[in-house]
Length: 113
Image 1 (cartoon, rainbow, N blue to C red):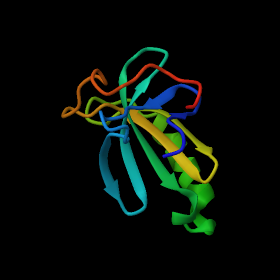
Image 2 (tube, rainbow, N blue to C red):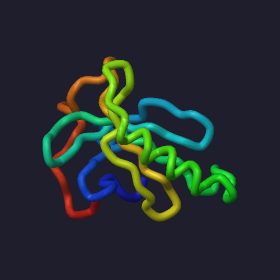
Image 3 (spheres, helix red, strand yellow):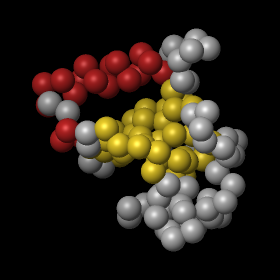
């Protein structure tokens, strides 16, 4: 992974070996453990390769992602942010129950991110 900061505020947490902490994969999408640098809250940051979505459906995908951002319900993980950076859509959601704050392995911000 060349960079670790996405949408200006979300930093992917790195393990002791310097590799990103993956939460899971689904198709081409990869979810990472991350932290919101403004609040220090843990988040899940998912990168979805743009090419993995049919060009005819990309506009619909973006509309639906933005609609999910507006949903507020106790049984739905909160979506904090959504956008496109380079060749990926970036989807930032609330931390999952199995995760804890990015403590160990989350180095201080560097200018390389």
